[in-house]
Length: 321
Image (cartoon, rainbow, N blue to C red):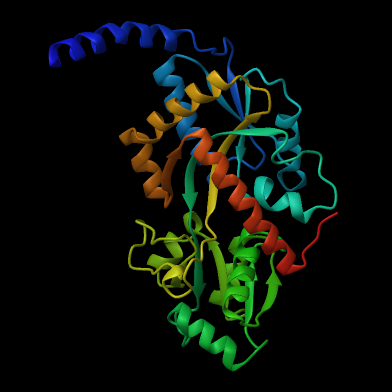
């Protein structure tokens, strides 16, 4: 019986290999459109993955930065592209989770116009305070805010940003009252914490290691569901507020209508790249949590994220024209 099963398996291998060889695959360079600037966290993730894909597959993968309108220009470009596998989107919570509810009108639909390819990584955001102040934990922050409703200020990289909305979710979960102070970027927000202009801020982990190691900021929580391997001594907010999760993420999308066999194969190749040491180690060093989920799992995750960020936008009252 064992020999017959082994023989059947060995005969099946050529057929599987042949089927894989027939999977549709672009014969021209593949563009991953990043709707944000070069050097951003989404950009670094996309470039690490595309470099490995190009080297392994002998097929050119390029990152194309098409910025503007809070990421809507590049996202719309992909939504209107031919679904032939040549053009993909580097999606993040801003364009594919928040903007659909932040903007009164949007030139794309985050669900109708796109299909998910792979959830590549998540980036925890970090709740930071001044190291010379009395707040040393999320519990301290909640207690201080409850003791003096409306007296504490929190900074973010702007109204409707993931940092702003993460605090709105925290406010709703704990019933605290703090005043939002928007800045023109995350760096300005954390500098305001260092200068005691605001008491707390939330910023992406990739921007913070120097400030944390230099003692200029104190990290009191990460917004991901679990602790970050990059800063394992910092508790997750969920350890104080059960179920809390407001991490950022990078998901690759394709235009709706892109052939399913291509989506499946590309997703599998991306997962291989994410687990290659030279890619995975670099991502972990940046503070990313490598996910690497398949299209179906990614789609389900994206739907949940849309619901979460919709609620956050409604809580914040933020709107954009």
